[in-house]
Length: 362
Image 1 (cartoon, rainbow, N blue to C red):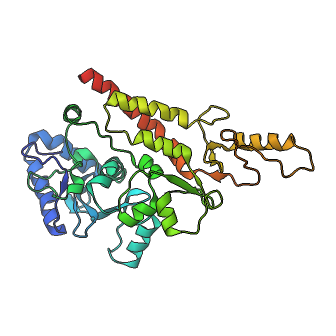
Image 2: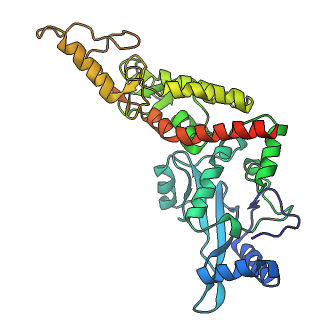
Image 3: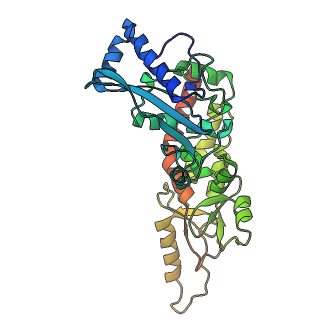
């Protein structure tokens, strides 16, 4: 439900207060009442008590605020709803946090999701789908959003990709510019280091991922050793070879769609168990740095143990890929690989569609 005159591309308003925002919302209601083209939509909003809303930069740095009005059948008037605040977190993407900024409770909620990500052009782009989904889940539907006019939109560079372009415009733009893919939140979180993200506020792909034995979480090697210099490879952490290979493929997202898809096809092989050659469902990391389906590597180890004399507890048990002795060493849940595998199918399908659209449009 938007005016077609001079709407800004970016759908987020700049900073302003609640009173000014409410004036815009109520003025929009009055304007729509006078426009016959929108009478049916306005009537539907009134009947369903839906929300006419806008999203703006909060006066608190790093937050977004959604304000809305809805029709109250009891009083037969439009009412102003309580503003809702959203923050971009390290571990959960966009979340709602309506506690008073600066309060202990606000900080506790932020800390529970890994802290707040600083808004930069680099790390907000992958989170746009998550924001739109979260808003829709809370009744803020795109068709009922009021977009800012040119000059009213936020000037923060972080939001330059939070645009209101039509699908055809986006496809056209994709052909004119290099094909840079925005990674979904699930993919980005699986392939980024929580220590680095918390420290810098930027979620970036890891270069040398290693997995901590005690919790199965993967970190950038340099960041983990900076935090805990006494940790030893092979005892306290293992290299994560599959994840590193996957990151190298995913990171090649500046290629043309068909070239990028060829890279991604190799990821399909990397999420397979080296023993059973089936997609891994419950990945564990061997001390060798290779990942396996838990049941298959446990069966492998069991078969090697049963082939040894009963009295022997010193014969090596070779890793299936590297032949490194893994006897007596822990198999570690590969938490990040599990997250990646969960998020992978929808991302891969999207890139397949992008490739098809690219060729249809060329």
